[in-house]
Each structure stands twice: as structure tokens, then as C-alpha cells.
Length: 247
Ligand code: FER
Image (cartoon, rainbow, N blue to C red; front, side):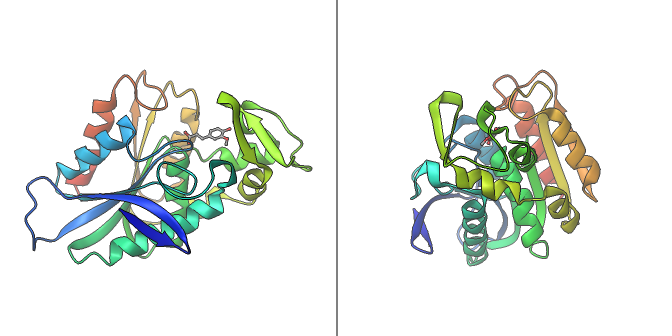
């Protein structure tokens, strides 16, 4: 199903908790994929189903230029994703059954939910960044995106890198302006960070650093696992379920 974000259609999927009956209320977790990802990726679906199994609804959403949402991949920026996230959160709040709203996101989606939790700190009950790619603003300032180097003071029109991907330079211009530490400091609610300690895309140090800086964070490291949890996805799901059961 689609919701509108100022003329951009966002593809979303709502899944109710296991055994939910019409008329019952429950909390809801918004779940966001990473860079080049979408709502049907194996790790996104597994985490979402795990959340449904412990009594929370999930609202998965494809961001601008990803999955079945509108927009061109190369034109996506973190600003566009941030307005998308605000729209999805506002939509979640219109759902009659939904009590508390939580955010969960993987990688660039993990960075996004960290930023969104800062913007909506008075509304978001808890935050689950999975392998959050919050080095993106730092590496954009150094001129190092997509595994390629560029002049950070004279950003090219187009960035090109991994898997032959093309991105408009605006992606880097936007990312350079984002200061994630400020966003971390603005969110005082409970946080669960999960990170594979052999992550090849987002160094595990970022998960560790974020967990240290948040006011109320738990860190779960998945030993021997990579960026998308190809080896121990079950442990990621367990960590999320254990944490949500304590809410
Ligand atoms: C990059 C490193 C990681 C980058 C994006 C990511 C745009 C995001 C990864 C993800 O969301 O899985 O250099 O450049």
C-alpha cells in the first residue's frame, strides 16, 4: 500500500502482531531498510516478523528511490529520507490501534532512525539502530563515499562507485551537513544497537561509539557476523525480541 509524502508515493507494509484481534491495541515499530535496500530484504523481513512475534505491529517503509517507492535512486539524499521518515511516523500515529511508536532501521536506515528520533524525541518511545551507518556524514566530509575518493570541497555532479552505482553529488552535499552526535544527544529514550563485529560496510566501532554516547543504550555485538547478518540473523532477531519484551 502507498502513502503520499508531498506527491511522492511511499510503499509501506503493515504487519500486526501474531494473534492480534481487531479492536486490540498494541505498540508499533517503524522499520527502515538501508542504502540500495528495500522492505522485502531477508534481514528486514526476519527482524519485522520477530517483532510481530513479541506483540508489536511493524510498519516497514521503502524510502525515496528505493524498493517500490517513487523517486530515482541517484536523486535520493538523507534530507529526502528524513522527510519520508517523518511522514511515515505521522502516518503511524494516525493508526487507531497503535499505542507507543518505536523506530528500527538498518545501516543507512539506522542512521536515518537516529536522526528521526532526534526530531521526534518526545514521541519515539524507543530506538533500534541496526549496524547504523552514521559514518556517512564523516566520510562525506572527508570525500570518501561509495568506496571512491572525491574532493570534498568541490563535490562532482555525479558520484560513482561500488556495484557501478551512480549518485548525484547532492547526496554528498547533504550528508556533509549532518552532525550525528547532536542527534544522539537530543534523544534520551532507550536505545538498542546491534552490530556484527565483522561488518565489512560499517565499522563496528560506530555501533560501539553510538552506544557509549546515547544516554540509555544497550549494545549487542554479533560475533563473526557481517553487515546484513548472513551468518547469525537469528541472534539479531533474538536481541531485538529480548529488548522489546522488556519495554
Ligand atoms: C558508503 C558506505 C556505506 C555509502 C553508503 C553506505 C553512499 C551505506 C550502507 C548501507 O546502508 O547499507 O560509502 O556511500
